[in-house]
Image 1 (cartoon, rainbow, N blue to C red):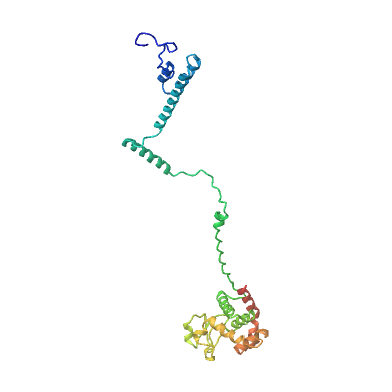
Image 2 (cartoon, helix red, strand yellow):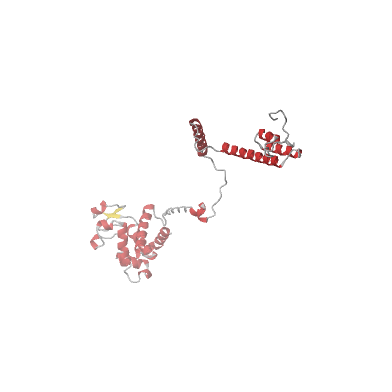
Length: 292
């Protein structure tokens, strides 16, 4: 309405020439009064379509422009809601709350959790436990020493002395035939007992099993110190006495092919040279038992 009380007729002939079609219309006012949402823009567009007579190019342009500005404002609002201005610093209470939540979250992540993923073997053969760790071979049990039992009518003491004769001969590398000759000779000379001599009291200071009176003869082979076989102490040692006997035996030419009594007599020079032969079979049984 004008100041003179007449209504403005926008379509009349007496309309003021200074009014243009771009002046906001009722539709524009209505659109601008709506909340700045996409719903207001759609409503404006719907009213314009339903009232084609009222719609003019200028008004349509203005409605479109107003809707576009409204939508841009909506996007800007979302942008402001999602972000914080550069100079906006959170309050101490908000910072404390954020720090507390971060501590709780970090603590929950630090808890130890059992893995439920199935264990998958490595593709590399070297990473396989069976390939990298080889089982240690079980140590072989040490063989128990075979118990040598007395044979050929001997007792345990006699069998032990026969074993010492065989061991000494083995250390020298003497063949089995020489061991049989040595055992048979000791059977004849001392019945396989380590004799001391009543004539040589010194011999009784060493381990012995019997005492004899055949001059100064001592030990398993009744060897005499006065004949150069060795000292009393040496001849009372079964190992030394055996090696002294065998050292002379192996020097006799063809001793392995000689009868036992002949070979033994060549070493001992006894008054009874044929007495050694009777012990051959027993000596053979004893050596076989010891050597297995």
